[in-house]
Length: 141
Image (tube, rainbow, N blue to C red; front, side):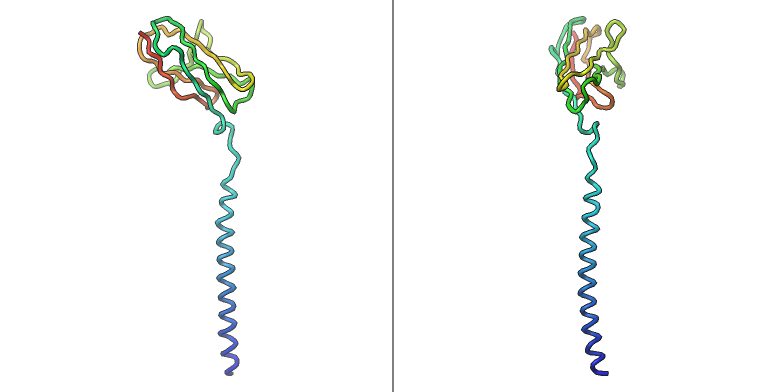
């Protein structure tokens, strides 16, 4: 009987060491699995961006304001549209009843223009789908 008690504690210790190794190895695998799952491909909306600059930024009523910028991550042929914030809503700017917009060509540079007819400080941005530029302010005197 004495040999049985000596073997069993040895087996229990070996089993315990193996269990700790398996649990630690399993925990490392469990931690590694979510990091692989988190690496989803970037969507086109997240990768796309639009820049915008106005020139001049202060004009008289009816004077021309030109917006230039670059659309990156958008396909050639995509349309960019000039929008103005009115009563906390973004509205498409029109000229002669048509939207102020242009289709992109290679590398995404664009030029849009408008003639603001109302005095005030106006907030503009350029959009394409759900991608938009930062707001650009134009003051009309």
